[in-house]
Length: 341
Image 1 (cartoon, one colour):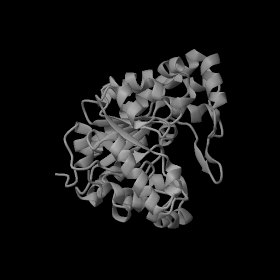
Image 2 (cartoon, rainbow, N blue to C red; image 1 turned 60 degrees about the horizontal axis):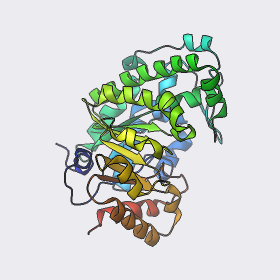
Image 3 (cartoon, helix red, strand yellow; image 1 turned 45 degrees about the horizontal axis):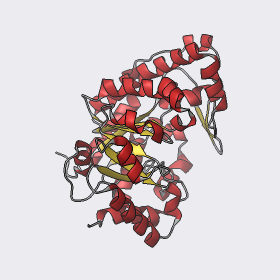
Image 4 (tube, rainbow, N blue to C red; image 1 turned 135 degrees about the vertical axis):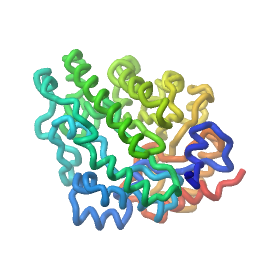
């Protein structure tokens, strides 16, 4: 039995004494102990070595005190398992030497045996669960098919993913072929994560906000919904679509347990657009953790007051930045733990 059930209770819509708190990208780059491991092991070695991944997963639980753990991994292990070469280059980030640009490349992409190709992820989950010892829930995650496609086609990170968007608009049949393969693989992957022991799944649609409302539904949400439909009877699901406030009414009817909100959408608008039907998560601007601890506490308490304690998960509006001082991250978490009406 999990001792700290705040996150699960909030996702259930149960009454809580305070909202739970965790941070996207909490297992990683702002922690000094993580940086020591980074100096010794490259990025994908850390992802693919269960002992290292589990150790990193637990760091924020033990050092920051969050109410949930999120597995240390990366959304791009999925295209790697599908036969696409993905590198993590210093000062550049994700890099795909042979990006997908035409249909004949997509025909060669495989839908893998995830239990074989991604077994290291499931081993990391099992090891993390042992080390967590029922203290808090463990979150597993995947990138949305659209977001994964963006990297596979663009070949690297981008502010606007113009090549990926052009590919979808000029070769829609090929784009949907690729999205279908990513979706099928992601469903298999997430089902195996649930079997391995994660308590919650978060679907990251980091680049959904680059699309218009119509194109978002066509190239992104359609596939997210397939994943949600396949998983919702098996686990709790949080869907986070950055910059997609326009789709909140649609998402609220999808069967997810919570919707992540970025910092550009107010609590009032988020509650209004979702009809109060679903738990919300977010939405402090990650850059605000560069404020003083006192200011962080003030902003966090204001945010909780605006969202309300019930049906709410405190989080950032995107991943924590690498230059955030550890004491500032602690100030954010402690402000929630000490919150009282």
